[in-house]
Amino acid sequence: MLAKVDIIMPLKPGRLQGSALQRVLFLCLIMLPLCACDLAPTVTVNGTPAPTINRGATTLNVWSEAAPGVELRYEDWKSPDGNEDSVTIVRFDLRHVRLTVAYQPGKPLLLSQWMQKEQATAVINGGFFDQKHDATGLVISNGQVFGASYQGFGGMLAVDDQGQVQLRYLSQQPYNANEGLQQATQSTPMLILPGGKHAHFNADAASSRRSVVAMDKQGRLLFITSPSNAFSLDELADLLVTSDLSIDVLRP
Image (cartoon, rainbow, N blue to C red; front, side):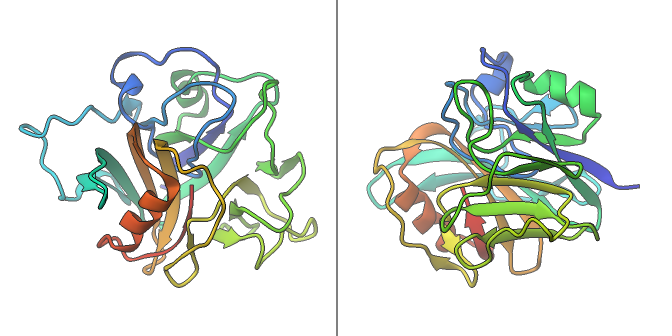
């Protein structure tokens, strides 16, 4: 039986409870800076938000099994400029998980409500949305298409009609309405291009809370969250390129 992982967009504005305020929601599909409300990226696995890291009590740099095909790891990251944060990494073996995008235009829910509604093993916030809680890019939820694709920029996490998960750079592989995708969500910019190369992009140099989705060279999906205002996009891209995660391609 496959574990279900949901990407949620958008979240209901409001304050998350408990450690969800401090930890990035980490699980399944696209994780990006949020633009319509001030919610920290948060990861929830099996209904439990990832805990705040206590460096003296939490084992760092070690993978632990959270569910069949789902591994969890905490790391302390520090940029060359001295900015640092404790990040959460969730890694998925796509043979054991089923990825879906949950979306209710204009009717956002809290993560806890989405978790209960979808009965998912893991959920994560995904994509940019406007003040009306509508996605700014393309969203496909269970075959139903919403909005319009970004053109010539950004990236897309998608599931095709054969159940294959893909993370792609839209400048190189634009969305085609006839390709029959069943799930999709988009964001910008791409941080690392296919082959593990640092992308060139124009972005605000300010530090912020970050969440990203990536594919590694073994074909596994990763969600990485940094809950503090620690890293710029350039710093984050550099840290990801030099990590031991074998990242092949990713976007925020």
